[in-house]
Amino acid sequence: MDNDHYETISIEDMLMLSAEMERLGRGEIMEAVKAELLSPPARELGLRLEKLRQFMSAFVKELTVTNAQVASAVEQIQDGSVRAEAFADTFSDLKTQSSEVDILLQAMDGRMISAEKVLNEVGQSFQMIERSTGSIKTMVTETSRKLEELGPAILNLTNIIDKIDNIAKRVRLLSFNAAIEAAHATEHGRGFSVVAQEMKILADQSSAGVRSSSQILKMIEGEINKANLWVSQKEKDIQAMLAGIQKETNHNFILLQKLIGSFIIDTRSVREEINDLLKQVTNNFKTWEFANENMLKSSNYLQRISESLNLSLEKIVAPNTGTVNIESQTVKEIIAKLDELSAMDNIMALSPFHHQSLLSEVLERHPSMEAIYSNRADGSFIFSQPPAALANARARLWWQEAIKGCQYRSPVYISAITRHACITIALPILDREGNPCGVLAADLTVD
Picture 1: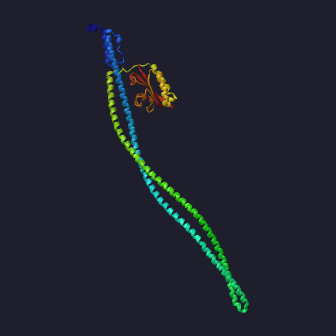
Picture 2 (picture 1 turned 30 degrees about the vertical axis):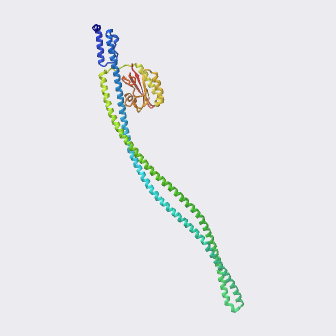
Picture 3 (picture 1 turned 90 degrees about the vertical axis):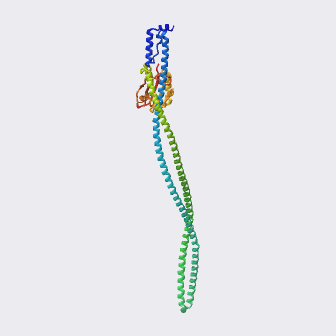
């Protein structure tokens, strides 16, 4: 019965099946096997061949997606490595700056110690001033006391002068009486009269000297009283002034001493904290260097895997298999819409809020659009729907071309998200001076 079944397959069907198998063998697996063109006896073989093609196509898609994911991982690791090198340079600069800061803090510590020594010397000077203040107080008090002691001496001199004045008056009275007695004695009292006159002259001169001395003593007494009053007043002023100076200098000295001591403690504490932090950062950096080295090894390993997958795909799939046409009108519409978006102020401003609002609306209105996203001039994403699978697009060709100011259209590839064939369209966002400041891009599904 089987022989009868195979006998019914025509030569044309056999040739057609043979041609389809040769096509699949060459890796041309995008086009379906046309089993409906075969006669019923050969159709089952055609359907089985179509299932094989579908299996091969699904396998190629998964392999392509896996390869794209591996390549993406390699790109991100390499990007991370570039950032790591920049971080290493930054860390080196940090160590240098930390060393400079430590030297500066050491110098400040030394200066503060010198300032503390100077402050101690100033403190000793303050103590000398304080002792001098006490001496001034003592001297002023002693001067006041000496002036007060002059009062009784002046009074004694006044009393003595008064006694001399009384004596002069009595001498004058005696000379007057002697003159009268000499007149009574006539010729015999002439010599006694001369003596009486001389005594009167002496008494008058004594009285005149007493009056002059009395006036001088009164004047001296007045000046001493004035001086005593002035010294008493100035003593209070000087004592108040010296007390104020002493209080102020003591207060400022103590305050400055505390301030410098606190600054020295704070400076040493900061030095210790910086050194501890630098040690921690150094230890973490060594750990990070080890991890980065392993990451680079993993990147090289993944790179070899990606190259191996590419070779496998080249063997399985024909080179022209990825060439699939998409309606040019759809592409033109999408490019026009992206170009319209890029000219909007809110898009040029690179506002994440407005990018999310405007780009999401475009995605909803275009069923052929699988994804839409935007990037800054550093490659970071402003918005992506669905969320981007990578952190930065700098390593991607579509971003590199668009940020140069060029419009980019990719070859057909298998989407890692939908597993469908698609193309990427990207164009630059230009600022008001016409310079690229970002990128707008979209993925279109290819049927």
